[in-house]
Image (cartoon, rainbow, N blue to C red):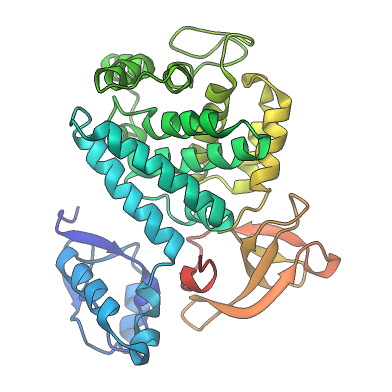
Length: 385
């Protein structure tokens, strides 16, 4: 496996028409193409055939710094690497949460958490479709960090729709962000472990709601809702949950919403040993398994907020066009889609054509796996603010 000085590189940067902004390596660390080189068609095909490609941390940092300094004449050359404002803001929150997970007992941890809550709620309010797209498009690495933030996003959007109130929403988002704080980055290993969990690992997982509550109390958290939501976020209405086997009527509604969001985000995220579940299948599974949650209304609102085809999904239409879902619609099965087309290398490019899937001729036929063809579009062109 490639070392820590390397980072994953999207194949969207591979373009025979422009010089590379990054050196490209395979997963063994072998240099495939130097920075600044123009690729031949043969090189493009060879790289496209690989499972993954990488560049160095230093090269990525340098390219992003240069991108910010380039004038408007260089925008097209850097388009593949420019992140949209909502994505950038969420990635900034990921860095803060990583700091918290690495040193949860730090004197500034509580302050950092409260800062994250304020910023995340603002992003969700201003860019709801963008944050949902982030969940679908960016969930393949650093699971422990992204999963908590994605769960918090779904909690915030659902609770806001249900009008739970400012303070309860803040407690809910705080709980979602810190529900696994006692597990820390161990969750990255556990979630991708193919072999059965050991007895010790099972015990750690069983106890983590209680341990997270104790840790948060030790750094000054006194908010009862925040702590209670975490304590019960793995309980089930049918009594099959943990750590206390609570049943319907004993579980706070906020804890049930965290559980619901947690399960959905886990389903649509990939693992080393399995592909992500399609968004519409994940929503259907949750609806069919509604006995685990305290109220059907919560599930109905949750699915309505997401839609069956949330932003970020790539879909095939009745017109046989491919499209990127960019905005939710009034119906859960009828979002707005922006048309995509494939080039000769199998890369998917965004066209300036939108389709209303509520129209019969453009209804959605199916979801296309994100990894079936490399999607070459800049999210900043879709979700700008």
